[in-house]
Structures are given as structure tokens and as C-alpha cells.
Amino acid sequence: MMDFKTYFELLNLYSDYAMVCDSAEWEQWPEFFLEDGTYRLQPRENFEQGLPLCLLALESKAMIKDRVYGVKETLYHDPYYQRHIVGTPRLLSVSPNADRISAQANYTVIRTKFDGESTILSVGYYHDDIVRTEQGLKFQSRLCVYDSEMIANSIIYPI
Figure (tube, one colour):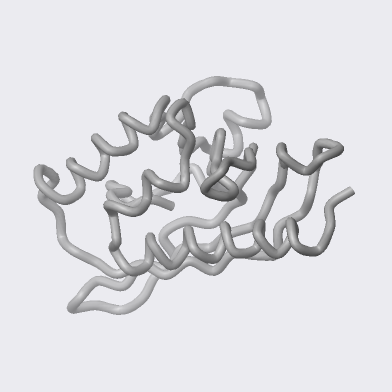
């Protein structure tokens, strides 16, 4: 069972994550993860069939930081804004002292190119394992399961 204070912290984790991604504050993105935290983008079909293939698999906070470096310094792409719409998290499990949480939430990410209209970039759900630390709640793992096999030719920014 989770108390309201912990659930409110979970809501803040989800909303703060979305705002960092939407504000292009890339240096802050890795701070949502533990040192051995993982971030993966996986198509729903592969997830449901138990197949391991992911579009993106970052296996540590160091790899997540490397992705930030790539986004800022080495990747050349048509720049865009993105906007996350994240549903209310659904609790899957909570440890007795609420120091480990498993949760899911639906998401939609809308992309707006500087000279174009807004389009849906990705729709799916997050499957998260979260741990309480001295700095607050952090992702042990964030799996973004996206619904459509048809994705943009490049997903640059975090989903």
C-alpha cells in the first residue's frame, strides 16, 4: 500500500521527467536514473512476444549521459520541440515500506518542427521500476513501449 505522500512524489517524478524532456534540459535527464539504471524504447509487438529487440537500449546512467552528449554535440537533425502528455500512473506493485515501486503510465509525445505543424511522434506506455534514494525517487528502469511499428525515421530526444 502506498501513502499519499509517496504517490505525490511519484506524480512529481513523472511530471518533472516530462518537463525536463520538453524543456530540452538534457543535462538533467540522466539524474532521473540510478547509476545502473536503464532506459529502453521497445515496440509493443516485440514486448508482447517477449522478444528483446529495442530501438534504443541504454544500460546505465553513463550510457544515458553519453546519449545526452550525442544529442547536444554530435547528432545533426532537423530541430523540433516536443510535448509529453502523460497519464496518471497505475501502481503495479509497491514494497511494504514503499522504497520500491513498479508503475505504468500511458504517454503521447507530440513533435513540432520549427517551420511546421505538430504531429504525433510516439504513443505508448511507460513500464517503470522505481527506487527511493536519499535524493528522492529514481528510475531503476524505464521501458517505453511504443504502439506503432511505424516510427519517425529518427527519435533524437528522450520519450
